[in-house]
Image (cartoon, rainbow, N blue to C red; front, side, top):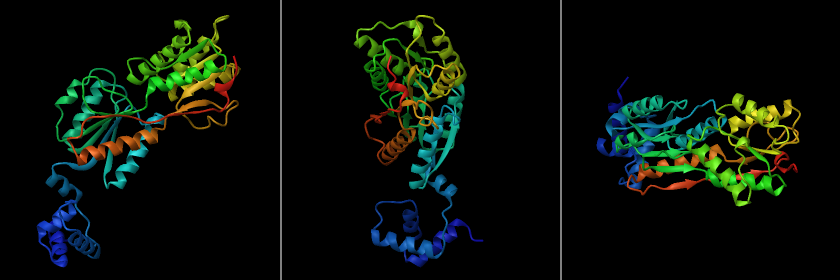
Length: 334
């Protein structure tokens, strides 16, 4: 079987162009005349030419792959985000290399280093907590977009939602239904998204002249198990239990909702961050702040595509809109 070079030469001969011109068409050189490009592409189809992606990567100095680093592919939000990025990359004829950090900064450094060594064409990163100044020393040839949360110490594009504003809106919704003792169940505030949501929760209460009862704040729930236990603890406070809850992450809601049903306390109003399967089928249906992981993933992929085309673009922050899906739980009166 002939190697990739000889096949490309056959394409050039069939199209009546030089090998260099055929190679420029293969690598999407915009300077190639449209008529010439069409002729070369037709020859590729007729000869059933299949590009050697590895050889193209070596010639270009980068891989035809996007690196995507998330917290965990087991998390419903991030699994949906991964799927959206893969769809967007496929449309650009790129593949996606996915890795999870599991919130481990050392693992994050390791997987990012591996992707840079592989010379991925661009990097989408959901950062762990802590300073990320080390990212400034990465290869300047590798564009990067931060996803879902900022990374202190690094200047890069960010695609996320306005977490603080979304949390304020959720609490204001509960306040509008007469609730004054609103509990908070969320992740540790060393995670930037969690810190912003907790700040939004506090801001909404103080803006309405209410003191924040720290006994109703459980910002120590990274998973459904701890969130479920926190919910039971809050409901057991005789005389000072909350009449409503803000669940500040999907993984928290997956613990909060079963706890409310198990204790027979579906009279407690609830607004959760992030939609999840069967949330609309429960009684009552779960009211959620719907921040689409797919929309975030698509917007991040689009921004990375723009930066790949023009590395000199100024860095920007893109806030993907959210919406409140009212299903019953968040509309229960105090």
